[in-house]
Length: 290
Image 1: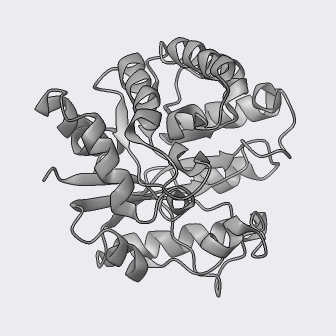
Image 2 (image 1 turned 45 degrees about the horizontal axis):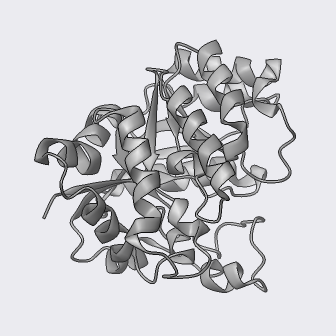
């Protein structure tokens, strides 16, 4: 079994944090509307081979961003769980962003910042706003990366953002949020845009997350997943891809964590062993300095 670095681990304790993005009354809310702590993560990943995990911010309400950062740094410092690094929440176009982000320069555990941008509340062109671009450039100066969690149709905008910020390292989440429910025309456009954005060398991509777009838990086949995975791997190449579990959000598309990890292992089984090690472990260690 290959050792795994999970580059996209969510944790949330609803007694400590408020997540405004899900409604417990919806089908999604019924799956995700309770606490997911390191204890549950350990149970979910048992036997899968996860040796390290990078925490990914969970879109807490803005006033709890500092509290979330403090919580996850403390968890990393404890060394009691696989969680050894973090990408924390931030709003690059907010007035206090420079002061907020600057506190993490040189932090042993905080590797980057993310703002979820694939939600309907994000206006078109948001990523190219002058103030937003300035915030992203600052991250490069601080040695912090920025995760792109974006709507697939806006990949061209984010290619322009990456071009404007050559000193910042970017991570494209979830294969550019490829959607298993896309029409053939939408899929063709996604493929074209992924091929283009992958030309940027200061950008890597997480093979993660898109499983949550399945029409239901377990309602997919390897043949559904493979074209997305293979196009991503072929576009970015073996040195700029990383596995992400996206637990527990992945449970919208799979019954358990192992289903996603095993599916991906099956899809890449015929690729060279060295490439598989890079995808599941080595690239993450190198990129995040673990």
